[in-house]
Image 1 (cartoon, rainbow, N blue to C red):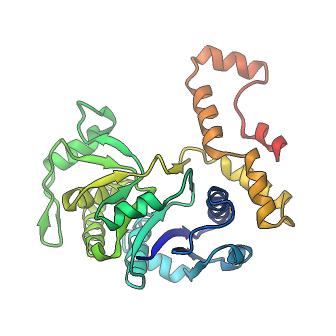
Image 2: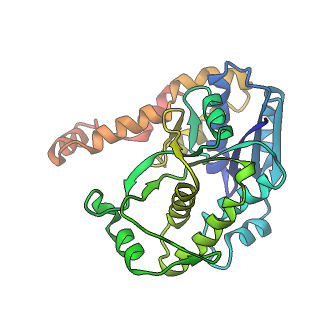
Length: 299
């Protein structure tokens, strides 16, 4: 069965740069010889940005995403993350096989084939478990627990059956086989129903988490796929990287990745932010505070 990794690189250079970085990391994992049975599919409004990658992939599909289509996929609520669900529905209507959707701010840490094997065997994937929607275990989900416990929610003639063992998964990665694509219609309907009553930015993440758990086994991809969602400063570094290396070949760009590993930078940022206030203050006074600019010198 064919496999596909799916991206949405739309809305500006920050997202296309993240996607290019993800493709370079993919080629790094496979030493520039990626598996022939895996398609890379990118919905984008700037296909020309990815032209140089074509010789290095057996199947690179650049699918047009116009402003009009993007707006329609956001729906009447204009919910940005609704677009992801519509894109998955569109893609699984034209592709048969195992699909791994990845946000652009993700990249492979190791070969992805084991995930595709599990998807083909019937498992679903999301990126990482963020905990049960239970304020006793996770106070940050207090509002979600209160909303789900007190509000009737209907979608596609079904009512949400909430219990406190329900887990919230990060939707930076979503994996399923196209044979189960009908679940995406439930995810879309539930997203709309939830967002109409509780307009939170992770409404779509909850819908994926709920529908996939109710339909089967959800596994996590965080050991295989890195997700640096909390490092928006990395976009500045990527912009510089691609400007400075504009004339470099893809193989040379892959070699240069050693100078900028997003998760290593994320860990260093986290370590700094976890310091006591006074420790951070003294570091800042000495000019040793964490800044993304310190990594520019390595490029």
